Image (cartoon, rainbow, N blue to C red; front, side, top):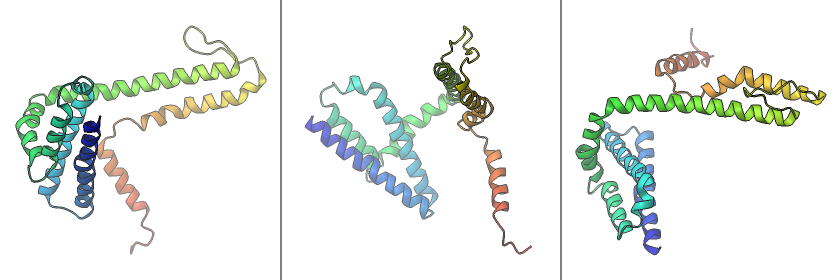
Length: 199
């Protein structure tokens, strides 16, 4: 328990707090491309490590000397003196991602689409359930509530109409955005907020 606590403190400081501050400094003070590449490499390696640990950590934590080895590895990849993140990235991550890039692209696009569709159906089902509960009307077999029988159901009808009209737009805000549209909208936004132009 004590070793685990020490490991968490050391990793929090060296693996997250210091690199986070270094990233802030690099972004706000226009660091060199080499510095930004080193930081991006580090965050890619630490992200892969955290994903691996969250997936298998429950089983790995029972291994002897797990916390000691974990601490040594995190210090190795995070300390600039060792350049461990660059070595791990160039030796293991980059070749593996390069080999499986097409599969990852397809899987991520599918996961994003399925996650958004899943959230939409679950939110609609939850809203229909709450709507039928508030109106005290049973939900039909196809999931649509029957007509309300109480006059106090009118505000709920209004809310359901708003959700039907604006709900898809709200949920679409969480969909992946096209960068070309973002560039056009940012350009248009910049044009709108220039009231003191010389023209």
